[in-house]
Length: 526
Image (cartoon, rainbow, N blue to C red; front, side):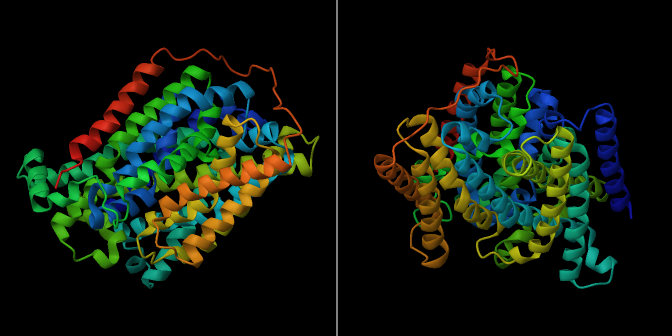
């Protein structure tokens, strides 16, 4: 009962605070609804980026994976810092200069309107098929486990998960549909720092308990129990070989942190370039700290439970929460977990609504429609996508390598083809619109065939790297026969102040040094 009361109390507090901060906002204009009125600050951007990125697919999926595979999966996190440095120094200044609301807008300026529409539709499909259902399902696993929903309602575990999925889906939709990006960002900031504090508390309390009051003694015991789990260099046959850092992983990270609408939309809504760069680089710092929350608990779980849960790795984190947290804190932590689910869910809904309204509807169905109408279309889009996600969510159960690995495999279908044409657009002047369009479909087909149909014996992240090179070859070949017919469109409208943050370079260097140091220090942990 106490757990439920603290859960409801914290959830209501976040809702009330978000309403209070937004009560005077104008949410019926395009910039107001989709970009938070171009008023976001560095701290809000970092909190929102982190929470949009870190959700229950990380808490559940990555802790489940580290329980089984150890620290080798840290690459997904710490290499993000390098991509965020590139985003802060190179990509975001360009986006803000162009006054972009969506990433596909850039593709129209660089290639043509068909490329923009194709990528917009690709992104919409990727949201519905991959991210939204996995976020909802992992959230439901955690909440069902903490509150024993199925026992309380006297239904089967499967029905309990369904009920939880629907409840989370409805709540997330309300935030995204009625509040726009600002509501998402404000609620994210509280939940984001709540997640950091609560997430750090789990391993800390566990280590204090294991070390009889001394967390360092606890960490030493966990390390001595299974030193091989602390090694960050993955073997060739592991779930994440070290070599992938230099093939497909870097392309994926560049795409995710520099070109992914769901993430970069926060920086596009920045008050000015200084705040955008602060937000990106603060996020880089947080990403280096985040493994303490989403990888270390899984290894602590191995200390407690041994290999008894290898067949059900995605249950390790909920079990650890119940084992180490005092009853009074379980409810608050469940509310923070709920916030993490809602954050990613409503952020993706908001981004999908932005892309559909601006890149598809306005261009093809309502060229002269008002901002108010665009916002209405955005809200309707969010509602339809939310219903789809709720229906698809239970279908992602029982992923063989865990839910996080499944999410990454599915992401590759869309991320790498889009990353290829974005990077070619920025760095290769001779690539034509026809080359970009053909590469999109060639890359997509190649990846689906090699990953899901023929099961080639190459790690899927290496396949990303191969696909990227193949896409470049296709773009060069097609562009040779169908050369570019238009110059890049440049608008000379200044939307926000474009002065660079004075600490950009020192922070960028610090993040690069720390990332390399992690690999040097933990490279031979075992």
